[in-house]
Image (tube, rainbow, N blue to C red; front, top):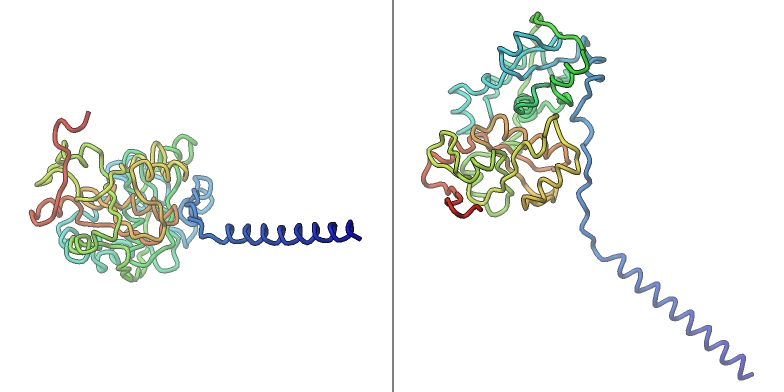
Length: 319
């Protein structure tokens, strides 16, 4: 009898102990865990050279060559339309982005993209060169005006050439279409907006480290960077192709002290906003960052106003 009582008591202890252990285990599992940023390129941003070759010639596809006009005239992918970076560097563009943040006016966007044969139903594929991120300029402006159906060719023109794919010097005849510009304010930042939201946003300087520190003023009235901005040169994302691996891009952010919280608000800039600044927008969007803006005025505008803080590294601090 005593043996049965001891056995029963032992079983009760085991059961209660097991319940307690499971309860404690459940409590631990319910603690909030910080979700890591998945290192992957989000769908809908890149096309391969093979995909572009297959899509070329379709009536609902427009290919934009974002290189300089001289390079385009020499040789380009058949059927592509040239929209070089200078298209959006005219005085009217500089004035408009300073006032409203957008890299060009909606009227000009409608004219340029409409004349390129783009309408609401068009898939736009942009390519440029590995030397400079020109492809990001039309990519971002299209998105600033509500046209998300735009991709970038992975590998740029260099990869297309290495694969010995067709090239031509013939300029295609384009039938203009009606492009409707629908402004997306959440994609742009003005100088005042950056200043007013400085405590909440993450500002990323996409220029070289020499420009960031002020050793190279790049012709700006004041050398250095927007106070509080993090330095992540665009080449840390791109390398010798359109984009590096997702893991390398996330590492580039972390290694420079940049938060990888997708829910925070990010602002990218360079000297003019177009090129390196727009590439930062493109890279972060590819990684799934939700709230990204381009500061169009960039250092060209910011450094010209003494009321807006600029930081530098003094000579001798860097070893």
